Image 1 (cartoon, rainbow, N blue to C red):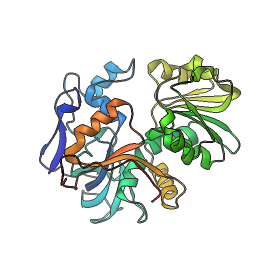
Image 2: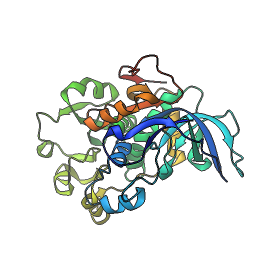
Image 3: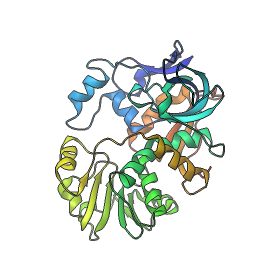
Image 4: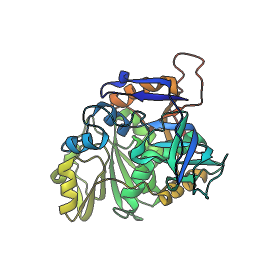
Length: 335
């Protein structure tokens, strides 16, 4: 099978597409023919060993001290079950599924093995592109807005990084809940985040976010702009600061401060199902920066590294390019 492989940490060019042996599903595992996956900020950080401040030593121990322990990145996927391992009763060959691979990764490939308890059935009305595109970012936004905090009708919500993979979902989920959403993004993406449900837009290029005069019930920082002190200044007395992209200091703050939340977002299948249902009924739009074949994965990593990715970049491992660069234009999807 073809897979995007990296054997050392470094820039996008350390990734190359090559033939590797197909993975074999073990007990409780499913092998999926991957129709869509995503190149995410997490993939780029692991590839470059560029971890949030304070997490470097522990991340190196987890992913490999001098060289990566696992050679195929990718955490989300949508595809078709090709084979099942022992003790898998909930899925059968040819089922359309999607899910998250967790720390095992390996979805940047034509075939990937995933634990069955990390998969859900893909609704027939949701494309593989949209299923993969909503899971990374969508599950994080869901956890922070519905588990680590509770967004409610009438809340005033500030989303910093409103056009990214997490932010675009946070804007929509807050709006769906009936909140008044202010999104922080670039001027070029202002109309986009308004279409996603933001009532107000702040251009980070011309505005000091930490000095905003308004106060919010929830402040969701998806890009690491705020710290405990600067973020709490933006809160109502009972407001909550959500540090999605926090460093170690932010994590400690989230553990010790009453009105700060942070940490890792769980990849819960119930959350995945809820998100997919919203996509299926048209309530939640999936924002895709581009869709590319596996051969263009290095270019996808470069786009992520640029910091200007909008939504998610979806990779189609089964697609064979007809031109050297087969990416498609940015778009919003409703199904």
